[in-house]
Amino acid sequence: MEKLLALTKEIHVGDPTQKENWMGPVANKGAFEDYKKFVADLRQDGEIVFGGEVLAGNGYFAAPTIVDNLPHGHYLWKQEMFLPIVTVHAFTDLDDAMAKANDVEIWPDGRFLQRR
Image (tube, rainbow, N blue to C red; front, side):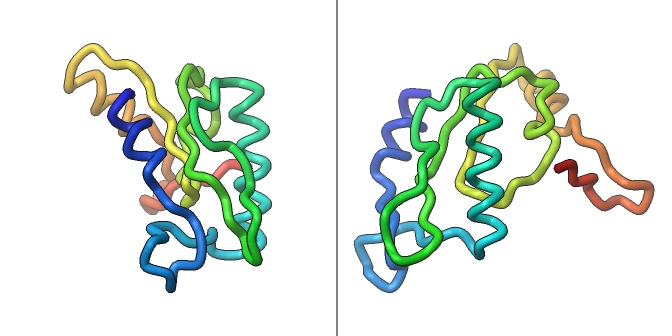
């Protein structure tokens, strides 16, 4: 967690045409609104360790966000967000980590089920 937090703090968010910025805005207004909703849900049910805020600028800028202590049954463990949000969870060994990482719901045709 210490290394993840340290590296995340080094991420510069802004105009991606400027070389000092490593991360640009989220894709569109819908993604920006999703970011705000997801952060509110995560703040209620987990602990925002870093980020969790929209950033000033002319665009849909969102801080890279790290979440801890989110119950593994929370819906955002099961949904690909495509946003600068990462949730972390303790595990006992590689098998436990892989079981948690693969614990998602999918449609019969193999697509991931998206819950909103």
